[in-house]
Amino acid sequence: MYWNDWAKAVRELLELHSSPVAVTWSHTGTVGGDGSASMAACQAVFRAACGETVDMTAESCACQGGLVNLGLGEIGADATVRLSDMLVNKAKVYSSAAALQRGQRSVPTPKGAGEHVVFAPLEGAVLQPDLVLVVCDAQQAEQLVSLCSYWDGGPLLVDMAGPMCRNAMAYPMANNRPGLSLLDDGARRRASFTRDQMVLSIPLAQMHLAMTALERGAGHVAHNAV
Image 1 (spheres, rainbow, N blue to C red):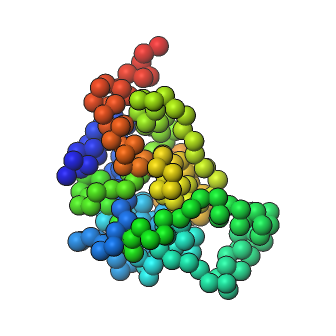
Image 2: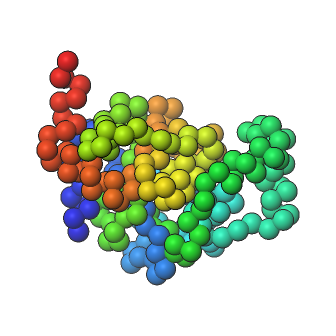
């Protein structure tokens, strides 16, 4: 699969210690994916970066926000009230229920794209990725952003507020442009991301352009050209 070869190129360019992650929405799932373990989307990303394949469904998604932001389902009225109480009154993520609602409605969710969301290390992904997620630091993210803007020179317009499942998955799926997550507190508590890590998400079409830019020599000399 052509996207498997991208993994080596990206890892060598950025000197990554983990794998880029292929994320695919599917109606059938994948062979060999672990669909039994209950986990949040942020945990699935972390596990896939470490070499595992996770086949997530509505039944195995352990996070209500992830359930909605991945388009796998909706939460009921009672769960919505509990989530609002937790994010507004306890975690103090939002000032009010209205602010929470504005955040939740700011990005369309990929509802209907598939009953399964498959997370796999890019080098071993069987399914064509809809998104490629890279767990990286700020310098590595800058190199990837430069590759993404190589052809048209356009700015990277991202939504960095809110949970990773929204700004690194729902946002790029809705807009077909890269997304950047600074990794919210919930993601850092659930998975073992380090303080300096973030997640850059690149849709398939943009990934094609970035890899073509890399083939032309872009990205390699950016920090030594001055």
